[in-house]
Structure formats: C-alpha cells, structure tokens
Image (cartoon, rainbow, N blue to C red; front, top):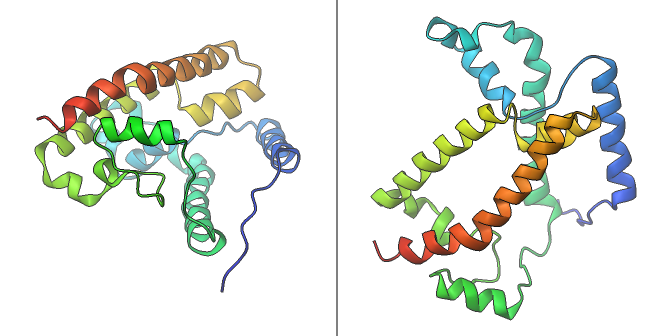
Length: 191
C-alpha cells in the first residue's frame, strides 16, 4: 500500500501543535522528549542508585506514549508516505561536503560516512558516539530540558529561561555547523 506524501502546510500543522500545547497546559503537563529517559531509568529501578530518579514515574507514562507515537509515525511516514527519497542539494554544498570527505549519493539526508553501521567498526565511531552522547546528556540536564521541551512547551508557557535556551540552541548549532563540524570532519578521515 503506497500513500502520496505531502507535508502539511504551516497553517494546518501550527494550530494543531498549538491546540495540543493548550491541552497540556490546561492539564498541568509539560512536553519534552529528554524527560522520558529519566522516566524510563526510574521505571527500570535507577532510583536505587540516585535520588534524581526518585519520583512518581507512573504519572509520566503519557509522555512515553509520545515516544512510541514518534517511532511509529516516523516508520509509517518513511516507509509508506514518501515517494521520492532523493534530496536536491546546492552544487556548492556538494563540493564542500566532498572536501570534508562526504560523498553525496543523492538519496539520503544522513551520509553513510557518519551514520551507517560500519562507523561502529572503528574506534573513532565509538569515541564520537560516546562523546556526543555525553555532551547531549549533559547539555540537556544543564539546560533543564531538550530542544522540544524548551521550544514547544517552554515557549508556549512564555518562560524566559526557555527563550534563552532556544536562542542558545540555535547559536550553538550555528557554531557547530560552520566552525566545529568542518574541523572535526576534516580530521575524522585523517585519523
């Protein structure tokens, strides 16, 4: 069975997200993906090792359903709703990626040089995975939440710390993309 994929326009998707956020606010809930890791760890008994995990994790089961929905929705969208998997990159971007050791194959948003299982066959892949995971985990806890929690829930609640965090996320992303990633990738293939 094949569906024709067409992204929902902003004027449909935006109000739906707003409506969901309104219901969450009315019911005293906050949305965020990173808090699910704490919930899962607590459910698996991590409260025995750290007070951070001592809370009523059963009250957060609704948020675990969000992860399940994201996984199922992503699977359905990728396997049944997308007809053309190719992406159209600017020739300058393709040339720049080639200088960094990444071959553009025209059919993937994630380059095989960085995201295939073969990356885990090298020690560099494991170092990047471990180091990246630590940075993401530390950053999420230090910022008091993840990008989705701050950008969707926090901004919906008009929280100044969330605005500051979101500005920091974007600024950090720009620095990573334009300055750090080229250095990392140009040295990645030399090691």
